Each structure stands twice: as C-alpha cells, then as structure tokens.
Image (cartoon, rainbow, N blue to C red; front, side, top):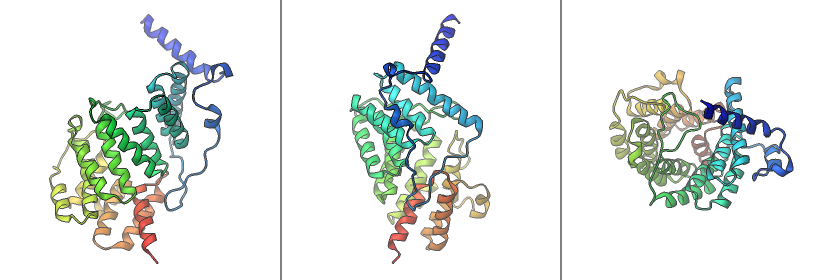
Length: 317
C-alpha cells in the first residue's frame, strides 16, 4: 500500500508540473507548435471535419489521459512508449497533425520502430495523407515480419478489457483498409486476408471485420462468386466483443438482414455496406446519395465513402 501511494503521489506531482513548466524542463516535443491552432481539415469531397460530440465526462477523461501522457514524456523522453502514448492520446482528441509530429519526432530517435510507424500511418490516414500512410504501414510490416508478434494495447478499452488486435495483424488490416482510399482493391483484399491469418487474432471480431472488407474488395475486382462464397462462411449467432456493426454489415451482405431492418440503427459501417450493395446492383444514384449522407453524418467523415464519391465525380463529365 505504501508503494502504491508513493507512486500515485509521483504521478500527481508530475501532472501538476505540466502547468508550471519552465524552459529548463522543456519537452522533447515542440510545445509551441503543439499549441498552435491546427489548419482546418476537409474530407476528400471538401466537407469540414468536426470534433466528435463527446459527453463532458468523455472529453474530461480524454484530456486527463493526455495530461498523463505529457507528464510521462517529461520524465522519460528517451522511451519509445512515451512518444507512442503521447501521439495516441492527441489522436483520440482528433489532434491529428500534432499526433503525427510526435510520432515523427519519435522516429528520429527510434527509426526502426514498427510501432511508431504503425501509429503514424494510422493518423496520416485519418489526416487524408493516404500515400504516406501506406508507405509507413509497408515499412512497419517489413520490420515486424521476423519478430515475435504481440497484442497491441488499446487506449480506449472495450467492455471486457480484452485486447483484440496484434501489431502484425493491425498493420496488415490498416494497410488493406487504407489501400481502399487510393483504389487499390487488390491490396485491400491481400491485407485483410493476411490480417485474418495471424495466430493471435483468431476470434470472431477479426473475422467479421476482415470479411467485410474482403467481400467489398473482391466485388470491386469483379470476383463476385468468390466474394459471395467468402461471406457465406461467416456463421450466424457469433459472440463478439466490439465489432457488432461490422457483423450486421456482413449479415446484410449475406442477405440475412434487409435494408429496412437495419437503417433505423445503422452507423457508417452498416450504411456503407448498404450503399455498396446499391453500387454493385447498378443503382448508382442511391449509392451516391448514401455516400454523401455517410460523410456528412460523421464528425470525422468516412473516407471509404469519400473515395467512392470522389472517384464517381471524377468520372462524371
């Protein structure tokens, strides 16, 4: 108990020291740059990105987590994890450019960190810097290929407090997902297929998410029979931890649910599955209307729908 109290006191003191730091205690990260207002960002179709409508309790928790990450960076700037968590905590608050800067500075000290590359890639994708994100993911995948895989800790824990993703599986998953944004559907299929084979993620949540994207990519590639055979393999009544809407999207694409049964509760993932079904059926006007609705309805947009709508607009004379 004495040790626990001492540790708590140290962390508390560190957190309060952030408020009154002096130049002699400057962070490795450029604090002045981090306090500058970020330039406004847009979706691929030019609509503004917005801060999510957090509850006051959630916003307060995210900001407290960031204070702790800043405090840890103060006392341990030589540690890889300090950059990882400071960047991730900024990202949870949608401060993408600051997060990317933190990961970039971390990579100056740890140039072969597949973890920093993985997280910078994710935030670059959220910032709509897709080519740079793909470069980071590919490099990260190369670096981890001959290393022991491990579970990737979540910054926002699910209801079971259970880690579901591993570093290697997530790198291939997000490489595949980001490749959709540049129209490389073959890379989407390959990334998802590789992610699904990783030994640490043999569970239902990974199955439904990777099958969702594999199906859509195969359909885009014209491999329709293969796509239908793949999605029919997903069982009914799976027990999930968190990917519930991916599962409903898969069940819709199977034909288990109808559009009318799902639309009242549909999020972006479900709506995108429905919109792509319209697209594959040749009902392009309905698909485009839904893509626009998905993008405008989400504070942070939804770049798979953005890329589809942007490609359609480029094709229209």
